[in-house]
Length: 95
Image: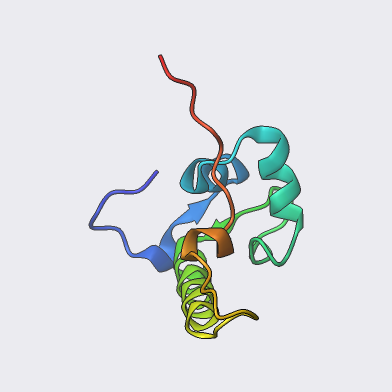
C-alpha cells in the first residue's frame, strides 16, 4: 500500500485498500463505503479512490467524537466503552 516515507497527500487508496485498513469483509465493507457516516466520500470517482491524509483526518475527528461521547455520562450514570462507539472490524477465524 504505502511506504513510510510517502506523503499521505499523494497516496490514494482503492476500495480494497480501505477495506483492509479497517478490517472489513467485502459485503459489510462495501456497504460501509457507501455510508457517509462510516467513511468520507472518495476524492476520485470511477474508480473510487480515497486520499490517505483525508482518511487520517476523518479518523481523528471520529476519535474526538467518540472521546467526547465517552466523557458525557449516559442516563443512569453508566459510561460507554469507546470500542462500542467505533465501527466493528471483521471477525477473524482461529486457525
